[in-house]
Image (cartoon, rainbow, N blue to C red; front, top):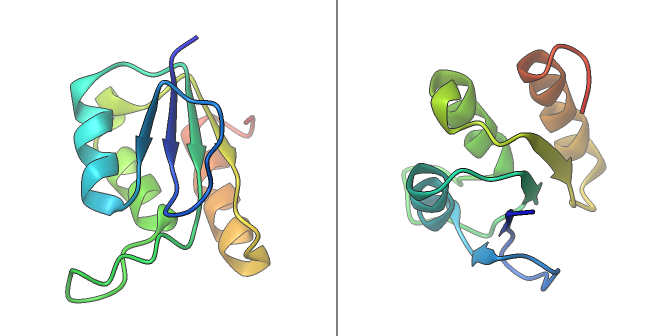
Length: 96
């Protein structure tokens, strides 16, 4: 199973780790992933506005060819988690 982790701090078992939005997008574009472990707060302020895991999901919504087989939220941010889950449900038709 090919696992991608996009998280600025956590070290979870994964084949590849991306620590910010840009690294995450590149990783999604370069390989097909079975599972994406996704954090909300990526600590990425290098753009005009903070880029979060929610922005990663919006990218996937616009570019479904990069959609992994599954996405698991690993965020401790309850509001961010809820926003992200709405997009994930839309992407996968109500399932995780």
